[in-house]
Length: 97
Image (tube, rainbow, N blue to C red; front, top):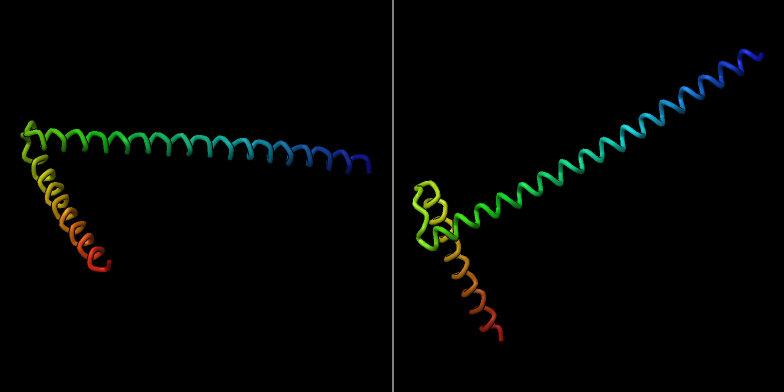
């Protein structure tokens, strides 16, 4: 009977050690995933900043690459459409008053 309790004690210790290791692995995995998400968000912010800088150069007439100009012209056209639609909204609001 003593062997049974001794084996049971060893098994419980092994299971507890395994659970502790798995919990540590899970925590470390989540920590690394969080760091990856943070790095990706930082990259996304940098991409947006780069795009904004390129567009500002286009607006100032300092950008000469045709690929960039095509994209900047599309942005400019959408900005004009947005302005037109905002004007339409203002007219609708004024008509409701």
